[in-house]
Length: 223
Image (cartoon, rainbow, N blue to C red; front, side, top):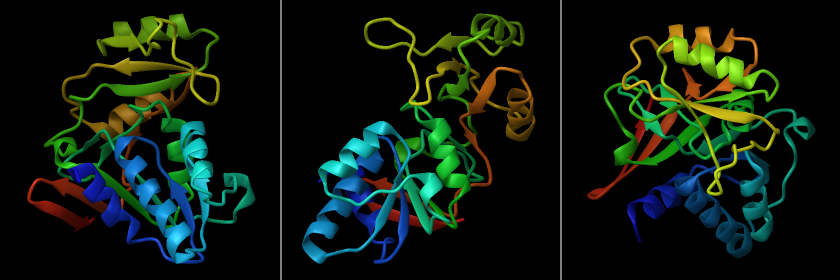
């Protein structure tokens, strides 16, 4: 069992019967959902999932995990998701899998958020991982040029075929290659105020617990 599997297995322990659970997107969240599906089948775990992407929806349905949409639930007890970077002060970058908008919608409507990662995702400061920004299609090239002028080194997120990647909500993604972010709060406010930006991948003051898969074992950190 690799460290991502171990972390996903540990994260599944937070889930109890009768919970409404946000189901994350990404390679580590994949193993959490696999474990959850096994518990539903073998233990009769009674939960309802709320997904953060179409890919996660397909995965959960294949495991017979009951689902509802975000609009169909009053609240979410717990969301377990991955992260692309987590800083020493527990701020995060998410969206490497292209699902940042739905991930943030689900996280912001959750009573508790758990991030499950392998130790390579834990960094001193955010920014080495490209920061995803979801933008509407109309005027997106002009917005791209604005980000260039700001020195944020933008690049389009593309598919393997070279076409622009389209999110589940029908938008484009621009990745910012920042190196290191000096003020995450300032950048968050600046980006969201740009007309055409739908959402960005800075997840600030969001997480309650971090499950870190390490070679020597899994660590659970309460924030």
